[in-house]
Image (cartoon, rainbow, N blue to C red; front, side):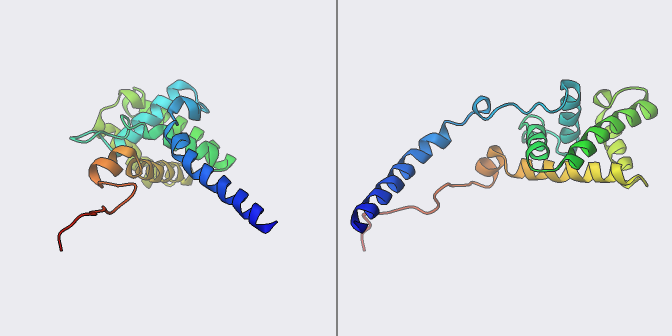
Length: 170
């Protein structure tokens, strides 16, 4: 009786291990689902903020690696309602600050103006602005460093490290 149960459990485990890579490799952004907790202009604003934090140089920037979608997904799925409110208010505050300082939205500002606005928010006396910039900055760095591009092309990540050299003269 125990032998049958062990064989059954072992066959289920082997079937799971065989089907797991095919299931994981079939993931696409469409199959995972959209992250649309924010209106499109706010999502574009968040994309520009992440691009300001990690701009495109010889390597792709945060916007082209879609790190802003990672930030949105993390805040939507892993953080509480307080963080979601902080994100919405921080985006609104950033755009208002850009309109007051430069008479144009944050998206239309150049890189130096954007950096100055984010630095001002981070060093201001307003704790919500500082928390917003810290949260977005930390999630941007986490998303960028864990992106497929950085792991494969910069860190040379191998899913199974080490190599097998079966026939080597001794």
